[in-house]
Amino acid sequence: MQLIKVELQPSAIVFKDMFHQLKVGMDNPDGADQDSAGSTVPASNFINKNRGHKWVGPSGTRHISVNVHGFGDYQSVQAAVDSIPQNNQMNIIIDICPGYYIEKVVVPETKPYITFQGTGRDVTVIEWHDRASDKGADGQQLRTYQTASVTVYASYFSARNISFKNTAPAPLPGMQGWQAVAFRISGDKAYFSGCGFYGAQDTLCDDAGRHYFKECYIEGSIDFIFGNGRSMYKDCELHSIATRFGSIAAQDRRSPDEKTGFAFLGCRVTGSGPLYVGRAMGQYSRIVYSYTYFDDVVAHGGWDDWDHASNKNKTAFFGMYKCSGPGAAAVKGVSWAHELDYDTAHKFLAKSFVNGRHWIAPLDA
Image 1: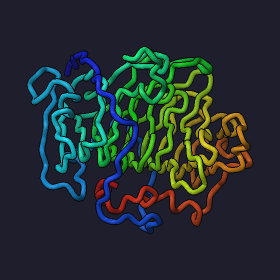
Image 2: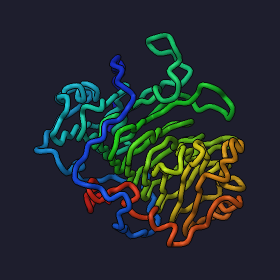
Image 3: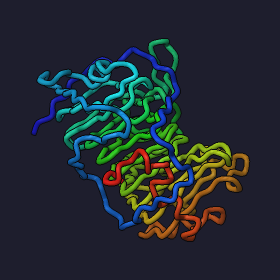
Image 4: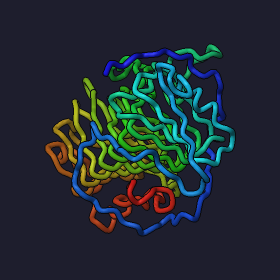
């Protein structure tokens, strides 16, 4: 199938930079629900055939179609989002037909319960090309967070079988202003399945809220998963395109009282290196890899404390549990990282890490 690129103008609307947390049922912050750890399953070409994640709470379902050829309800994804009423209380499934949608997309906090449903991450793509040093409409530099090709502030967002790209050129280490985000999630209770995230520096901004990524492909070079989200990545492929050196995750937990962190379960680390598997972006950064396979791309030591700022190696929590592969030994190379036992690791092995029992359907976990 030949894919046709249609270039669309980015939305000029600027939305407030915060997320709105909707409550459905009561979450147990220390829930004891357990998932099977299972074995590593690469997911680079995974297609989930379920037609959208069904949330608990909203009444009814509405489908909106988007087609680059003009045969759907709308020709751009942003136009479909704009058509949804404020304070939406329905399951809205935006069926996005194959094609490249070259546009910036923003889902505001007032539009929860939206699903982006593609037809496969290799054939349904939303992309843009902003960098942090580019100028915005006000003449000022965009900076990192505003470069995202797709930004979601709403709660209860989900995406399936679709890719998000930032096509800005990859920087060399040390180059300034080249951060280029493909996707930013700032809303609570977001679910992603069979999705692709493509970029270089700062590909996926896991900004704030609870998120669950299942069988996704995430590609980048430097800190290509970053932010202060509370997120689980299950059976995902983390693919490095680093040239001289790179890093996978930079987590920004800033207080011991915060419950944020990144839990990687049954993932696969591939690509080029050498790279760090985690960096202490925040003083109390928290990153744990469990049942994860590491190719021989890991830098000696595996972890980085962000230039020893404020002795983060004394307060960050970096851990591994039953990982494997030729790169796994290198991840154990610093004294302040932890080889976990089950009693410590178990809370990073279940969807309860993101309070998922009341918002992730059992079949989706």
